[in-house]
Length: 388
Image (cartoon, rainbow, N blue to C red; front, side, top):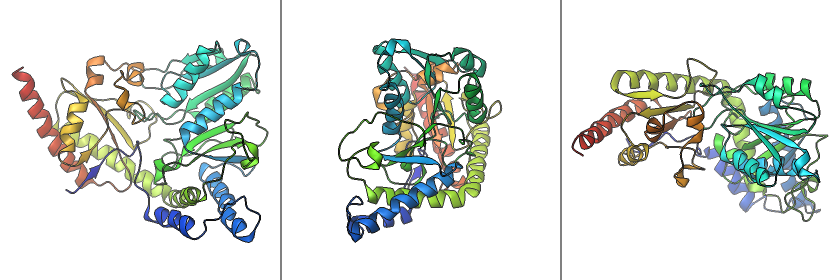
């Protein structure tokens, strides 16, 4: 096969319609959308349309602000830093997240921890599910922010976001709830109506890289990360990137239209891959808790005993098969995968872990070829290990 791309949780190929729309706004509708002349006004129409379509995709009402950003990492930083910057006495506030967040959340919280902000990391159970009682008991009158990942980027568990938000607000209605929905959009049913802040990236669902959004309830105020000419209601100054936003809009429309069909495709591919692994491979462990918890079927996390995941990745690469060993945002750091540690995966198995992540463009035939080559690679590695 020419190429098998099973790293769609890291990024996805753009829809052809997306690249066409991006080019249109680079070459034809190229005016600055903040300009007061006709051409600027025409270019700016895409902003309103994208906001409306995004809110529809997220299943929330129109009484929201949509701040366009460079992607989810910026959106998360804006949500967390923009909230905390409102308070003078940082030692008098506390913020809460979990121990299985994406690095852009975890490292932002660690930054504030270094500034003496009281920071709490809620422990998940062995299936990656948040202990809601512990979360609620951790909230008090000093709690200003709770940040939760909707779909975990490493092993695909889905949190009961609707119930979590409800219980947080019952305990303290003034706590702001931020949801990292980066891996959720187009993959699971959106239950975000009561979320105060939502972060996402376009490139996770076939949009262009370099654009995302932070969606806010209208009553939310944040201290901006970027000051300047007052664009986007002064929440994020700087010339608005209409070409990427136009591509973002196209990806949103296609994702909304094909959601139900694509969700079925992910489930079929996941179940087929699990079946083929069980039929052909020995000494492995599936870390995605598909029998014990709610999951997104586009992510399949697997560990192989006695195998180094990165070596396996590069062997598969020789056959033009692309998987990952970790979140692409942290894989190059060569650090221990603390997210898999958090759900009880043994360190030796963590070293032998790969993440397989699907898009609607993948096929069962690709899985068959992948399993064939995976088996060959594992046999070669086991033979080499035998003579070490």
